[in-house]
Length: 76
Length: 332
Image 1: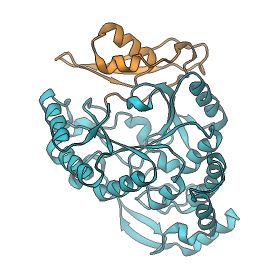
Image 2 (image 1 turned 90 degrees about the vertical axis):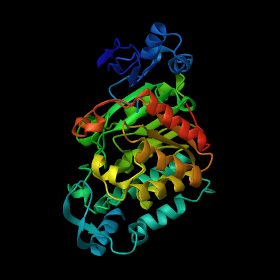
Image 3 (image 1 turned 60 degrees about the horizontal axis):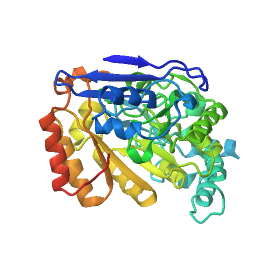
């Protein structure tokens, strides 16, 4: 499992965002704690993934994201 | 008034020994045959007035009133179906181990949830009343002291900023937020009245908790994890799971928008998903259902052989096919 930490956001409370993903041997990727930043990254890696694309298209200015720690799941 | 109510509650408590969840046998105070809120003058008058849908009061005003009621009720906690009856105001803790003050382990804008709800500013409170071995946030969910103290003003400022930046909803979750109902209501009271609020719950709340929640949230996003009590007992150490969740879902469907979420677990399609799906089709036709297949081995899942992997593609396909056969309203 890989943890991805986004850079601190100037408009945030100073906390990091944390997303987690699990890459399975069959190529499936499970994501937990999906933030907009991480959704954008995954979309760049695999633009054909509809699940991610539908979350990326949502307009949410990254520069003003409110951030912090743990949880949540595309997986759960 | 709150103080006198608390002493009254102590007066009506009958001590009895009950077998409860988590495999423990413990002393539990219970309020006899009558529900707590019917014996609590503050709660009775406050809830009765506050719960009227036609009330001209705004949500924030109602939430503020109910937060006081909920806090007083911590003196004899029956917020969830464990009905521990402990005095959390005096430092006692029940099965969730939560004290009187809520803590927070996450607050962030996310896009993981149902498409109609995202982006959501998700606020996760520490502690839970279930003990799911596979919990993806097991650390803070099993530990009500994890995270940071809840600072409502600061948190709501962040929620406001998120809403201004495009977040569609504010979601309160855990752990399990029901165990922190006073704090939850304080948060609701401080949020804008027109913010769309989502209650993410394990659907194990009591009737008292539901009364206080009535009209507070636009959407209930409720888990229905297990289709069989045997699985619930083995994997989450909770008795009588199915009846309690069904009761909560039926109530939620009558009182707000409802989305039912089921996380497929490897090896549990037949024992858990099938009965959940069949019941939803029969009892809540048309209800929105989000079927999640991204289970991974987290927390203490490895204690159970079948949970040491992920849901296979054929298993997932079988689950979706069943949902379609039953005509479930699957939402992404």
